[in-house]
Image (cartoon, protein in one colour):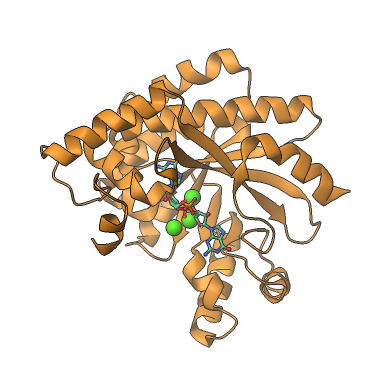
Length: 277
Ligand code: C2E
Ligand code: CA
Ligand code: CA
Ligand code: CA
């Protein structure tokens, strides 16, 4: 709440109740943000830890607010989830990511774009159809899009999530479990879910150099992922030492400030060309 208060008169806070005055004005502000083109697509690279190659990017949304400046996602995503506005937001991000994948391919870069989906998205039975309609005119193969879902979003209603995820997987999308290890994971569901990738939560990765337990969790997660035939990505890779440790443990890919912070999508292709030069 203290953090929310710092943001000024309009309160950007997850706990707003959906009918309150603030949340109504927040909702109309978000609608305006989409109409006035105030949302910004940021990208953060995912790098193959052995080959040092950029293999993809995660799409992370920002809000370029006319008076507030660049608003981070944690200040409006929870609210968007609560009101259901997240569906429009997810569609916006997905379209942006697909368009970017198309432009990158035209520039000779084969990149997989990861997009975050929320619980609300997963519970939407029409999601696969909507995604299909959105992707069709963009001429981007589904395989170049990876959908990141948290364990908690799945465990909210596992059967329903499973059916949506199976549908998306059959359409060719890659699926990833985000923030792995922080939610109520059920290994039984992990086995049944048609996922391709696990992302080790940054809390473990950032602590593994000083805390042996975190290091063990990272190591076991890598083993678990590989035993299940999944690619494993470490997020929160902040030091060269973490890179070396992760590469040693056989972790496939990394994402984090040591490589690069999220940047505006317009800068990404030049950044990759520079990194790989
Ligand atoms: P996430 O999906 O776990 O995304 C990773 C977050 O970790 C990003 O924060 C990224 O900037 C940050 N990060 C990456 N590397 C490092 C590192 O080395 N150190 C540290 N300390 N942090 C690192 P960001 O962009 O602020 O996003 C926060 C969260 O907001 C995301 O967490 C995701 O849950 C949500 N979010 C962002 N964009 C979207 C979106 O388009 N849709 C949905 N549904 N959620 C989004
Ligand atoms: Ca994510
Ligand atoms: Ca994550
Ligand atoms: Ca996270």
